[in-house]
Length: 349
View 1 (cartoon, rainbow, N blue to C red):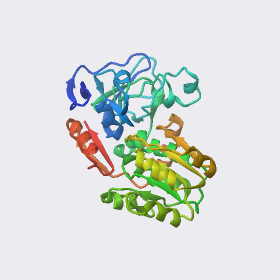
View 2 (view 1 turned 90 degrees about the horizontal axis):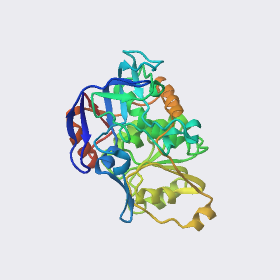
View 3 (view 1 turned 120 degrees about the vertical axis):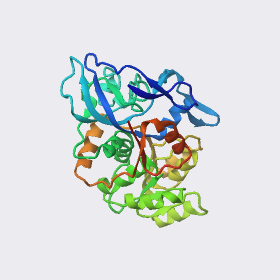
View 4 (view 1 turned 30 degrees about the horizontal axis):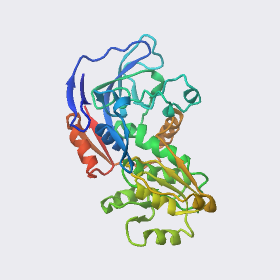
């Protein structure tokens, strides 16, 4: 079994060759065909998330190095444990990676991605920057045919995260302006889904103009530079007093502030991204404008099933994909860190 692991935070991934695991109990071994590279993998390689003001969320304890990154996984079942049922060798599956303990109240209510004892692949358990992965239970393996494997794997994080966030945007009708901030991998998924879920072409705020065309191809209406002089005032005026909802797929202090300022009275800001930083909020403005701020973190197994059903209907524009060899995993992370990736990079063992 070949994998690329974080052995020291902040350092390039290490190539590791070891015996291919044999599944125990309900475990399933999947031979990986495609694994997406997510921006959160960059933070996990660093070992922390930036909380702003010099504060960090330390990931050294939950990750327990060495750890194989990668959570957007699709491939073929090659071995099943003695208690595993519902899948067979040769089945093509996408893996739901946000696995919980399965026993707490959060998990039993179908929100295992919010479990306080997570077993997420690529974070708490070894993930997809490898040619095989051990999945703890067949219930998290979902059929994706007739989708292309490279497209299917992206649904496990970028697609799922966008879908769950848009569902939290509230009641958005065809005449309600929707703002999507960021046209990276997750943002593009949100743009692709907006027309399907709400019947509208969203306004997209993206500072990198090299991503504007790809945002329009994904289904964006207007595309604006949020850092341009007067951008916030122009958007507020053009939207008739603010947008009904803003979904921040960047998660920087500046992007959060831009989205919050763009809301109309009674509007809703959904914060998704994890870039980092901080920004002040005036509580009186939250009350006087009756706005809501909601956090959204990846999504549930049921939501992934719903998203796959939508994708199978062929209604979503394809995610722009760049295929790279598994051995290029470290460079793929560096390209993503530098902002040179448009769409999604897929590692191919």
